[in-house]
Amino acid sequence: MSRAQRLLQLLQILRRHRRPVSGRRLAEELGVSLRTLYRDIATLQQQGADIAGEAGVGYVLRPGFALPPLMFDVEELEALTLGLRWVMRRTDPALAGAARDGLAKIAAVLPPAVRHQLDSVTLLVGPGEELPATARPWLPLLRKSIRDGAVLRLHYRDAAGQASERRVWPFALGYFEQVRILVAWCERRQALRHFRVDRIEDCQALAERYPLPRQQLLRQWRREQGIDAGLPD
Image (cartoon, rainbow, N blue to C red; front, side, top):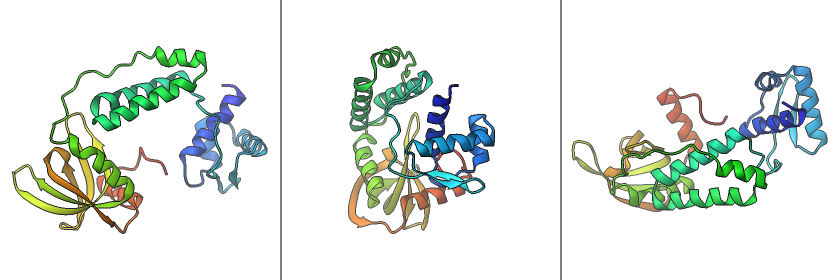
């Protein structure tokens, strides 16, 4: 790896973390010595990267610093293309359209040689079971409610066929091959609950915002599920 590539990778690592990361951890991920890591941090700071911190404390990249756009290697392009193709095939029309538009925007601004690599990606999404028609109407509304932190009123029918009305605080949406799962705090149960989207019979986003930050609910859910990895710090 050239030094320029290493500096870019260091920026990418810092960008993934919201809290300070120790120099030792950064050096281990890059496969360099601490001395080299400190030199690289100093170089990036001299080039305008707003990196706060110091040796023995940790480092964090402050918001507002823009990385060079679209610096993708082959595997990053493969990951992006495969992921967007999955979204095109496995989600509702609104999100599928957004994935198509996103891939087109990426392709439009890539240098010709890199665009050829994008066009040449042969990782394909195979056929899968169709998403139940009863789930499709609600997905755009659920995504927007999660973004807005809006309380939802659900008319829901469980696996036993029992109908209920719930007020919930939605904060995550799980995409599985056969089902979509809304993760929310249920005011009726006073607990975190999972709701199959295809069992929602009616759904209304209220003007009311729920009182807790979405990330706090997500952290609580992760603790209850025993999930510690896979999300940014």
